Image (cartoon, rainbow over all chains, first blue to last red; front, side):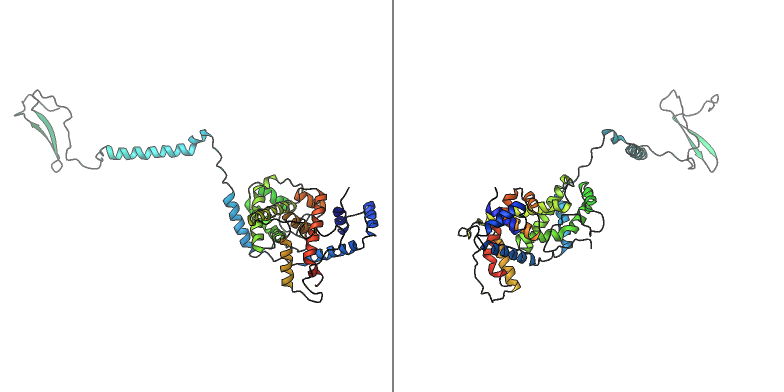
Length: 168
Length: 213
């Protein structure tokens, strides 16, 4: 069963209908002051609804500040874990290969002496590649004179060349 | 501007916003659920004024209303994944805003050590008796708008958060009892009882005001 408070509230708000309304209004015959009470409740409602509400000031700043709050409170989405196989993807392999080439080139350039370029003229036109002297104090070198276009074989430690020997 | 303007007499649209331009709410909600903050910002733009108005009616303080509206929208963003579209977006948002506001008013009550006694001033009043006026003003005395606002603010401040919510939802937002009960997570009988005592108290505090305007 509804309490008086519930029935009175429903009556003030026009929500009491049918048998409930008839019974309540029958009870009111002995309480005319309750009718005045309803009128006051409605005046109160009118008063509350008539009050102006201040507008939201700086509405755009409200949104700006709010979105900053949301950004600060939203955990950054974790980077999706990439499959391990993708570590050796084609771009990575190409990059690694290029890096290896650069390092190898650098090492070659710094550690291996540069060869004489073909265009550069050496002062030696000929070179003694092999010599088998019986005496280790004897050595052979060649000197080329470009002005005279002559190659001189220089034998150190050999007092003379036997007439029966010839250079090969 | 794509913003639904607030109406003092009703801050709760129970149906979709026909006047709103651009994508509809459900589209924006779906994009927000996918993490699109721009879509959520569009929803904020659409409802920020109405949210502010509703909270202001409860708190009677602009700064509090601003802060609580922000808190409410942040909570809505965090829980938007749970919105299933069983009601309109604003009805769903309204419940969040109302709960945020009631929680804040409760915390303030605890912090200030103020206990609302909704029976204060009513113990001598029989349920069917006429409201006892606080005859602070003579009948012929006119009351200024500023004073009316001050008196209403002071009177509403004397209500408990639950009674404030019931009065605002019924008298200002025009909600049905069942909707108020759903928002407040209580029975319809409790809503009616809260309305009864809240009205009695406000009538006791404001009778001279509404009788003199």
